[in-house]
Image (cartoon, rainbow, N blue to C red):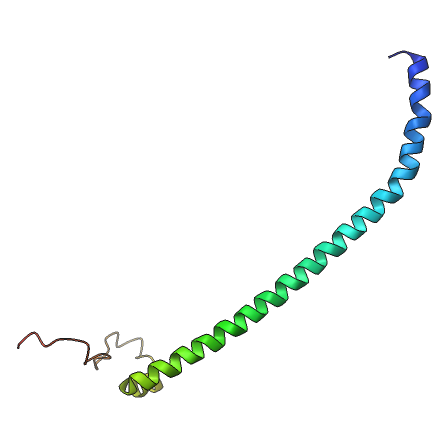
Length: 101
């Protein structure tokens, strides 16, 4: 490249920089505004999914408690003490087969 070619590139570069910078700034602002909106929609969707999952779990628990009424008493008692380590009552006596006969 000679000096004459560089002298011709200076005004072209100045024009591109002058008109390109405002366009780039507007593009960046619009891009980040779009990303923020996408993140808000994603956050709302996750919140809705969490609420739906909680409702589904409550329905499942209510159905299980209707099917197995003997589980209700055990669930209301809470977990066993941590120092005991062994549960004294069998939670599913109807599903286990007697090995003696």
